[in-house]
Image 1 (cartoon, helix red, strand yellow):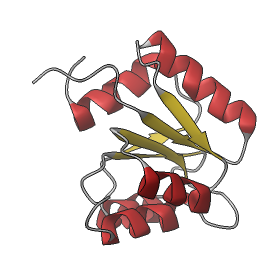
Image 2 (cartoon, rainbow, N blue to C red):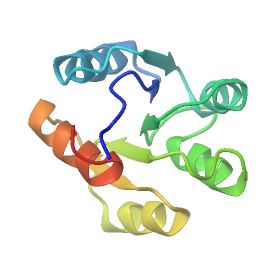
Image 3 (cartoon, rainbow, N blue to C red):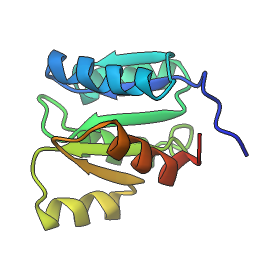
Image 4 (cartoon, one colour):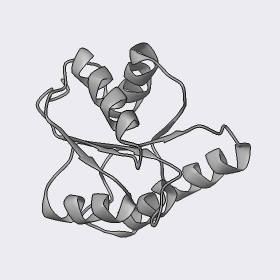
Length: 128
């Protein structure tokens, strides 16, 4: 099944520059229907209001982390099927294990490029 290139993608990061970088990479890959949130709480609110084909979230944010967002999403029957990719600056094994247990679809360690982002996305949503 072909990936819907018009699907809405939610980019969650408390660092505006990182949102811009990830958004630019997504645009390079052909995705233009992008939304952003500054933390997990804002992202959760947006997800409850509209449908997203993919969430790309930073791990470290205040007041609600990406990990807390992931556990909330997976606990919500409506949101549970949403593909979720976690982005972090730390490649701590325990974080990767915790995120996997919580139901993350994939994991990206910063810094990364468009090729890395695409390969992680393909493993989650299929080829595009």
